[in-house]
Length: 525
Image 1 (cartoon, rainbow, N blue to C red):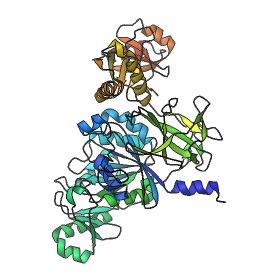
Image 2: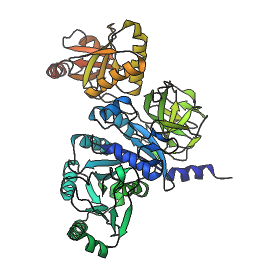
Image 3: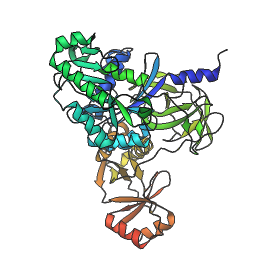
Image 4: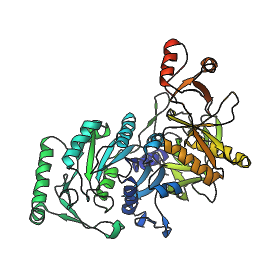
């Protein structure tokens, strides 16, 4: 009989769980789709092999995302590649949804940073990188769109190191200038890899491995310049170093074009060969739970209405230890209640399949898990609680009202669902004002909330900007005093947290100065 502990360790070593981060329009969604192509999950870019060309494999499954051409939710994509199981956690591509990205990165073991060769480090890239750094995630860099005009790649290397203090160590280097992309030199083998375009990038790009002598004859000055740059990189020590990569100090860098499939295989191979597999996770007390311990996992995302035909609710759980078996009964740590896992799925975009088992690093979708909340720990055997997943402090506020009183039940049900998912924070007035206030990090969260309330719950709403400019966590004693102060308002979050909202940051600063004993905490978890 096989050793169950050894089985868990072996399966965990086969897992790679990673996220893709980028600025909008850098090519994240295209790269995601091409990973599915190269893994064999789709026969042509955009078509799920198991469902035929009529079904789409795009991770941007929401109608609003498809209309705008941006990612505003995150999606889990699981596929096999080179005898490994890859869990790709696709993140929102818009800064207004950075809180959702943070939650997704809490479940990842590594990240791919996608940069546009013409734009380099942009604001959203910088912000997301800081989240990766806070979580100590190793990062693989992909310089995308090299088939189009862009900047000198050496200039980009300097920019990466200067702006985010991450030292890039190129493993492939382009032959030809941006817009005149001939192929790459693989710095590990010295071989020149020449690419050939395919129609629309719908199939894998043919790759020809050319020896240096022939490449020099056929590519001329472009190849000589690339060799000279590689020698320069060798001279300054820009070579891959596994310990510094795993420590988040250096980043292996690849150059290519996701649209034409140039360099996609190199990046996917890097996930398998370089990115770390699952490791023991620290619990709330700072102690690691062994990978081969009894099952444990943490809910990092909740998404409703992924299947409009069934109006369901899926809780995504990162398996942290042990073996998950569909139908097993686990403990919900926050309540102490038993939870049955009868309806468990793996996900490929909006497509699902029943999953019977999962191992550390995998993501399990628990369907219609109405009692689960983001950050919840599930476990079997010895109790464990993982650290809570941080909620961002809202920066924008808006009052929300249902246009039709006849749809009020749908309105409240929709608000509850969006609050549980973390789309917005729904705040209420404990003193009796029945008009909810929505809190968000970015304006587009309000737009998504209104869109989903109307299209998924049948409750059209009116949003009115609220005049609050600052927020602090407070307690009941301070709340009593603030209620008599003009320019401030105390609201309560679903979990009972009291939030003090202020119309003026200057007025808040004055209150803090004059009342040092009041509870006005910046940290909001």
